[in-house]
Image 1 (cartoon, rainbow, N blue to C red):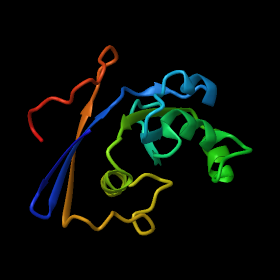
Image 2 (image 1 turned 90 degrees about the vertical axis):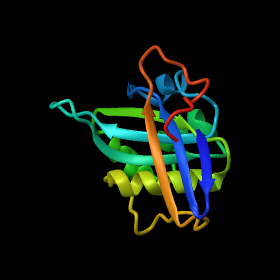
Image 3 (image 1 turned 45 degrees about the vertical axis):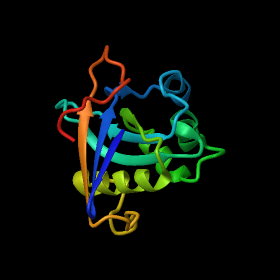
Image 4 (image 1 turned 180 degrees about the vertical axis):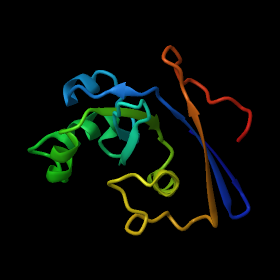
Length: 155
């Protein structure tokens, strides 16, 4: 993730992983890093265009444990939502956000406003109130690509 602050505006660039099929929480834990970040969870559709269900921030536990705990019937704080989501074919992608919880909150707010996921609400989820305007540029990584450095262009 990259961040640039100009006056009262903040500009983020995030790099999404490719979409993965969610088999179960154990197979996903072999893919996800133990770093803080944001998960995008989608419903797989027959027309090929996934439906955005949820953006989920994992700061303290990291992405691997965050997803595992979200779907675990014992540890989940959202048991009914997790059970409902597991009734469909799910896809997920992730982006690492390791600067601060407030940056993650701003990016989550922008994603929720931009994509209107079914299980997130912009009326209950607010930004950090540190900046007048939040902008996020999203980069999609290819299957064989690893994010070491986000390109310098276009922040």
